[in-house]
Image (cartoon, rainbow, N blue to C red; front, side, top):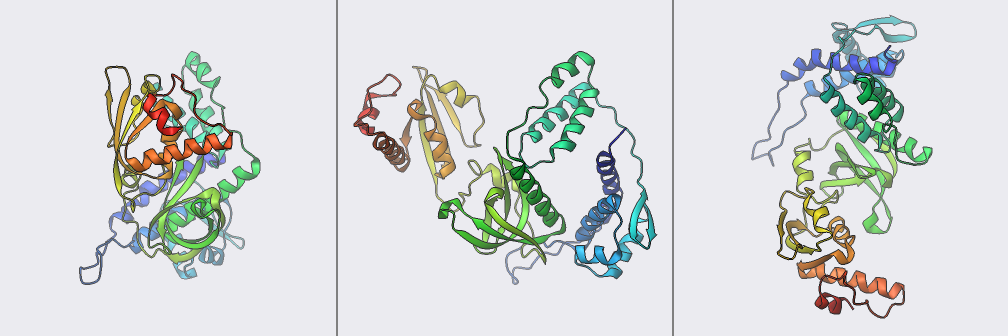
Length: 380
């Protein structure tokens, strides 16, 4: 039997299909050249569709009074009444003195998945379980249901490894879950968020920001918010763990999301913003030992790999020299040599010299791990 949360998720999916036609009737207005840069504004119909979906979800969880809903969504009680009338076209909503609630959620037809599709969903769910801050218990239950669809021998193999999760404190996980819920709600409703943010680039100095939230993106072991920063007047990326305080306002977005998040991330190396920095043609030579690890991965859409006669790998890419990229190069240590640009070479040399100074080592030993004698001389 499905759990209440699983049934709620199915119900929301069903309702979304039925009211999505409302969104199709939405009209977008484009600012004329005389008014400023062309951009699309969020139409009222789209805002209402999102509000209806969230309202339906909340009414499936508990009773809400009309005044509570009006305060939560930042609209009038009359608007809430009209929204409830619309929801009643698809949902059975009862009203008592304690408020409104969905009496009997619609039933969804069960789906039958072939083994390959079930395995694909299992893989995606396992990846989500390793993203700290995701609601782990609902994901575990969903994973158990998916594994039950597999043939017994295959199910046993998958089941033996499916509960591997990252270690973290309950406090960190709970805080991430709370931030994710708050930001998801702000994105859903098109509301500005206010942050007290400790930027790593400013040695943890806390600044106050107003941000139009566009998307939440997982990156390695953390989550990041991509949005329009009112302070910088540009798109910026904010790590959730550096948010000291977050408040969801009822203020509508100052700039509708006009960026393609996928294309935005595709242009970057890692998650750090580099659009305002010049792009450099980077040439790296990786050792024969490191070459397979580098060439088997897709790092960036501009990368080119060429095997040299001695087994080493020439790797070229055109990117801004961001901290993310510098750290990626540096973690290969003596298995990589920077050919260009010169500023990246100098940064690597400075880091190597700093390590020598830290350990009070006068020079680097001449070891076979170094790619070339000339490089050893330059670094020492």
